Amino acid sequence: EMADEIDYNIVFPDAGTSERHWQGTKEPVVILLGWAGCKDKHLSKYSSIYNEQGCVTIRYTAPLKTVFISESFGYKELSSKALKLVEILYDYEVENSPIFFHIFSNGGFMLYRYIVELLHNDKQFSSLYVIGAVVDSGPGSANVRGALRALTATIGPKISPVLRYVLMALFAVTVILLRVVLYPLTKYIHKNHYDAVQDRPPSWPHFFLYSKADQIIRHGDIEFFMETLKQKVVPVDSFDFVSSPHVGHFRDFPEQYALKCREFLVSCMKASEGTEIKKRQRVQTQ
View 1 (cartoon, rainbow, N blue to C red):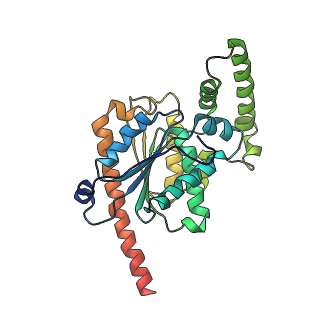
View 2 (spheres, rainbow, N blue to C red; view 1 turned 60 degrees about the vertical axis):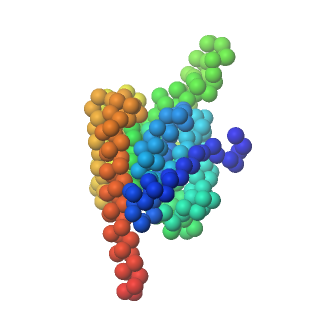
View 3 (cartoon, rainbow, N blue to C red; view 1 turned 45 degrees about the vertical axis):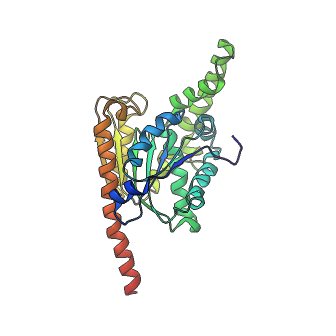
């Protein structure tokens, strides 16, 4: 993988399916951002929910080391990946279509954070029209455990066990120091994904799919995040699957999960048509 290339997949629906679902309106472009270490064959099962609904889908998972190691140390490698992803919309000339996100866990959410910042701060992207986001199993705040798991995967099995433990212990101590103990100071240099989005949330609707049984991200983190968004008048909906594990809701409840995602997308499209008409009327009356 070249430094400036990202390994993504884009799928266009056939015209018939698209027309059947979105009669005459531009079909949505759904951007799926995988969890850390997510294999494409897993992510493609989620994108087919939307392809069957006549949407364009773009799926991408940031490399493990980028997600945890670079982010833990505040090195913003993910922001360049975010820029590449947004540029794909222009490469395929779908930048005028409604855009919808489906984000998994902290790995996907960290990337989403930088996309949101680009759309907030960069004039050239201000015309992009995001209608909503599904957030699956996230976000969590201090994720030391996730960083350690990523490190184990990055080190690989060939290294001696003793050295592995030494490296992991050093890494854990450093991450805990930087991201937990010193976070009140280091956040001025580099806010974590959780605080960054919570402090300046985007205005489009969010739908949180999570489970109290999640062993990796505390459901309390997700619920607190949702409350903050609601206080900032962001439309928030959520569903607690109760028993399914981290990023395992679709596997355990496939029909229910797919239906919830599709219904939310349809409601976002309906709401957005209303605002689009209002925008046009505003322009005409000025």
